Amino acid sequence: MLYWIYEQWDAAFRAGESWAQTFKFLNLLYYITFRAALAAIFSFTLSLVLGPKVIRKLISMKVGQPIRSAEEVHKLAELHGGKAGTPTMGGVLILGTVLLTVLICGRPLNPFVAVTTCVMLALGLLGFVDDYTKVIKKDSAGVSARQKLFWQFVIGLIAACFIYFKKEVSGFGAVAGELESMGYRMKDAGHIDVSSVGFPLFKHPIIPSLGLLAIPFFIIISVGCSNAVNLTDGLDGLATGCTITVALAYGVIAYLAGSATLGLEYLNIPFNPLLSELSVFMMALVGAGMGFLWFNCHPAKVFMGDTGSLAIGGALATAAICTKQELLLVIIGGVFVMEAMSVILQVGSFKLRGKRIFAMSPIHHHFELRGWHESQVIIRFWILSVVLAMGGLALIKIL
Image (cartoon, rainbow, N blue to C red; front, side, top):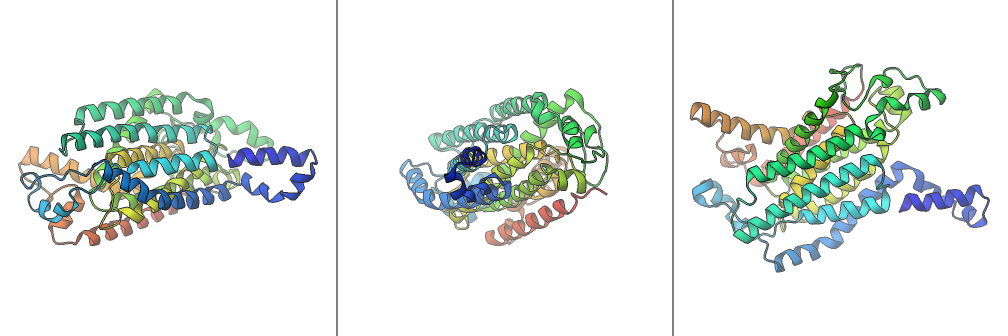
């Protein structure tokens, strides 16, 4: 909406209308940095305003989080017993504020913004069904793992096909003529397309082109990231805090990747002029995350549930794919990776060796059972997430 206001002002200003001269400050609405900052502030404020109302509504609906029994989790049941009944499905607050903020501050028809938003909402709906099933059955199982994985695959497939076949999204090298006419040196940007796989430290893509194999590659990233965030969401505010740092990092990357001067000329990273608009979405997610954390920090008044965790994971994965920094997600989202890998290693070790590696997985529960207080685990993991995000951004400059 704000960009539409700018377009109306710009047309009037070029036509020499007097009111446009008076409201010359509306030129600010053109700039990505201004609208991205505004998106973060707006979504944060909106979350604070709507948060208490959403929590009261969830409580009135009696959508309390089912806690696993002592037979399932043993000592952990004692540590988390007080969380029983805390309203879940709070992810609707994150999704709602991000969506509204993008509609106001962003350009929702931008293909990068559109696909990221749709993935977030689709996975959010899947998570909502899962959370609602848990509440109705009063069981922590929810939707079966097979069904959940199937729908994650379907959503990932649709998004991957859109990214691969949509010319404005896939044609990273298609902007060569436009840039050369502006006087920029293309370096290697013309050789980069959406099916390339690269890493910032390497000047050339590690894999020049995956071809159609890019589609299953994108699906794996989407499904993997959404489940990794879901696994991380086991302590008050843990997933939310890590989401803020990862979203902020990819907001910066999206802005740089959409700038010919910074992204192409200086950093020599995959460039697409439409990408910078994605930073508005990411900053809206940052603001919504901070607003949600206000209520989700220990002791949590509300949990995001699968409604939020699956949606956030899908959005972060899509942003990584769109910016062509998929492998960098392993570093920037290192906490999510660590949580997912701990589960994989634990299950694999138990099946192959009959022994467990950790006291319990995901790994945040391991540290709880080893004597760390919940707040210690959360804050230390947040610190690790910040360090990893800064490290990932530091690698952006290609040698």
